[in-house]
Length: 259
Ligand SMILES: C[S@@+](CC[C@H](N)C(=O)[O-])C[C@H]1O[C@@H](n2cnc3c(N)ncnc32)[C@H](O)[C@@H]1O
Image 1 (cartoon, protein in one colour):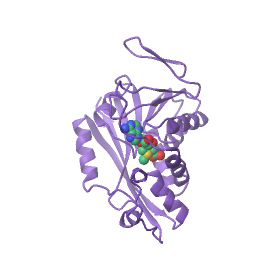
Image 2: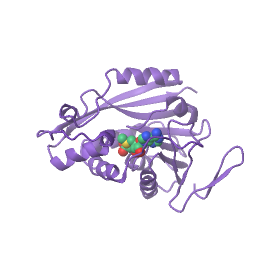
Image 3: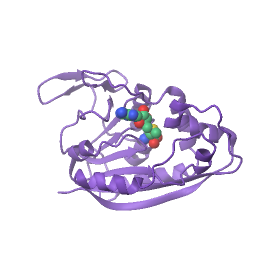
């Protein structure tokens, strides 16, 4: 999947030689994607436990019940680690789409996905809060890991029986950093809210798995954790680096679109 992409109205868009194109609505979004510094910090953190376990759990959820020739879309792909691990576990995937607001992220994700799989990979720089430039009912597995969750649009692009694999933080996630003023708080009742919004969009909860562990007390890694997340856009100057390990506690939720 490279070269030219066409829409139902006959418009054609060329991917650049790095394998991605930019599809914003007429008015460019007023939000920022991850910066190169945030992406570099994320790469380092995702290479450590317990994030490696989370990647494995995501890939297993993607592969469960998937048939040969599945289409995978990573919506808010970042540098594409989750998509690459998931693609490697799918049987002859038909195509993969790496989508994010950050061109640096899409570029890295396309490269990584192509290393992991022979499937055609296309990258799209887009705003997840706008109508997605994806046809209805064509995606078998949609990934959405710590990224904006536009559930009505995710449900629309999923094929009947397709699945959305999403990850949300539990209240204790990175709690030591929140206590030290380095992170944005997790809203209480987040899981219930996501589940009820998903049901409204036509997505039924199929499975929920908790993934928890500790990041070792290591100042560079802890600094990376702060740098890689949305809090990096709201850098706090009075943050104290915690001395002990940092809790990672998330829920992997799998939703199915009704047939
Ligand atoms: C916390 S990162 C997660 C990235 C990746 N899924 C991971 O876990 O490594 C959130 C991602 O969402 C992207 N993002 C933020 N707002 C977005 C928007 N409105 N549309 C598309 N992507 C967005 C950021 O650029 C970033 O790559």
